[in-house]
Length: 114
Ligand code: AMP
Ligand code: ZN
Image 1: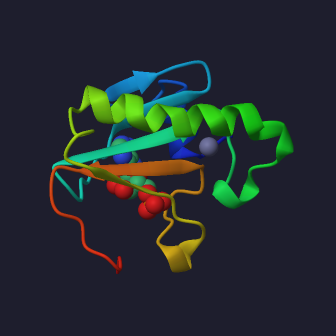
Image 2: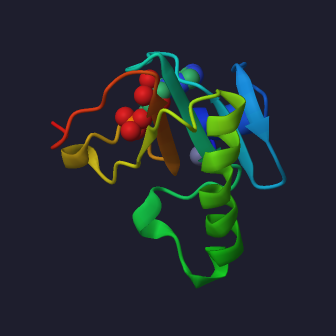
């Protein structure tokens, strides 16, 4: 999609520090990290948010979920723990309207989140 920063990252028109990539997914370090490990996992397909996933996206959605553990292992935080977050709409904190998950780790996480 034109004018979508994450589509541009997926198409490598904008550079990012890529951690992991497969057919449907690309994961890169967040430009403004909120924890020592902060990876953004996006779909290559433009979907507005997690709420816009549909039945036809089932295989891709499964791939995303399976990527979390792979990325945690690449970052070597699978034993200490990590958090996965996906924001839907501004009220939840979404600022980029292209489906993505945050993988956060390397520090103690608080609950409830802010
Ligand atoms: P959200 O606020 O949940 O929509 O998450 C968007 C995330 O994308 C934020 O954590 C931003 O810091 C991150 N972000 C925005 N632009 C870039 C970029 N060019 N490279 C890496 N991360 C980015
Ligand atoms: Zn997009």
